[in-house]
View 1 (cartoon, rainbow, N blue to C red):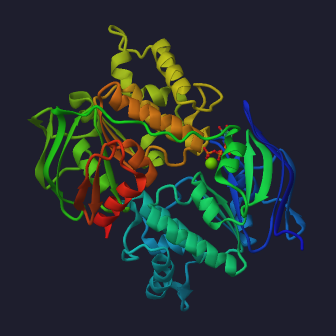
View 2 (cartoon, helix red, strand yellow; view 1 turned 30 degrees about the horizontal axis):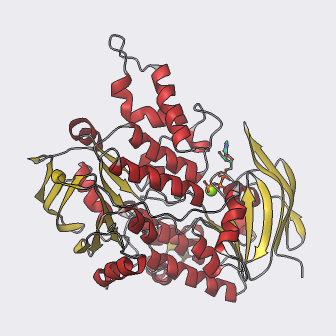
Length: 505
Ligand SMILES: Nc1ncnc2c1ncn2[C@@H]1O[C@H](COP(=O)(O)OP(=O)(O)OP(=O)(O)O)[C@@H](O)[C@H]1O
Ligand SMILES: [Mg+2]
């Protein structure tokens, strides 16, 4: 049988980089095909070429055996293709219903009025099936990154496509929601839909894919059936070496030196009575489902939102913070946001400028008040090297970088800021497995060697267990429980995840 989709000799280069080099691949009907590779390997580029978002330099694309070349996304959509891309694509001002049914607003009657009750009922079906439990008339603007992602997935389901591309769809979802999505994909497969699934979470690839293809530096390394393949083999194909599984060891938490404390912090509908203390050299994990109050708490701590009641103390002094900038200036406290596309990066600005942004006030020349380009370059180069950021140069616009490399810049920017207290929200979302090991060690060393106090918000249970010394479990906007001594010698992963699980149920 001819494959549903086949690409032959597909190539694409951007100034300074060959993003895809002579790639040939086939996607069979009714299968889930995984696509994996390091950050910048060319996965998103492949999807963009096939869906008309970018034009190939060379090569052929066949759908049902017929050569096609979509000039834009609409043409691909008309042929039954749907895409959940790596970028957040929601219309923030519109409701959930409008977002989900954006492409097919149902009109009725001679005046072609939109039949809202019918639309809401229709949207509701898809919204519930992805596990989003909100009224469909809710504006999308106020939703968390994870909830927005669920809206996009519901939209993809509503499109009833026969070929679905998902570029890291679970990157802002928790394990539970991700599990639900994988179930949905299996259901689509049983209906004959073909799925191309890009993910850095290899467990997901093993759980749901029939076949997996590996890209490295724009080249197709190979395609294998998932049955019989081991994780170690797949990782080796991706990064060209074996992964290292390491325990990082005990953190030297200084209990006598409290840097941050929250007392009964409350924000109506978001956070309720949250109290805890954070010490020098500590990594305090915030674990919980999307919408459980973790990020909302961080926003209150950093002055990005105002509490209705309760207090924040920094180094023992009660303080009212008014913005992220204010926190950095007055308290040397930084915040790596989970919404990097919306608030973390200036996509049009260069890589160098993005990294140096938080330290500009330390770089201005005394008399001229100008930013020293040499200083900016020095900071930029140091962090591009430290985090192994793949870019053509410091002058490249950040928006050109692959998703994972943009994420590294968000982190680099706050590392450059030299904060004593760092709130890090989902630091390795979309980061490849090799780079993830690297970032974990970097974050751990900030606490262990430089005595920084870190709040780590993560939906990635292995990550939070590996790094945190203590974990607060959030549920229904409050702290449901605390798991102490996570880094104590002898404690096992199973034992800690069971302790977390007890507070979630
Ligand atoms: N519009 C663009 N302009 C310049 N370079 C680009 C552009 N889009 C992608 N690139 C470059 O092409 C290469 C491949 O990027 P791509 O986004 O396909 O990687 P990826 O495999 O999806 O990585 P990730 O896992 O980080 O999302 C990268 O080096 C990236 O910087
Ligand atoms: Mg990508």
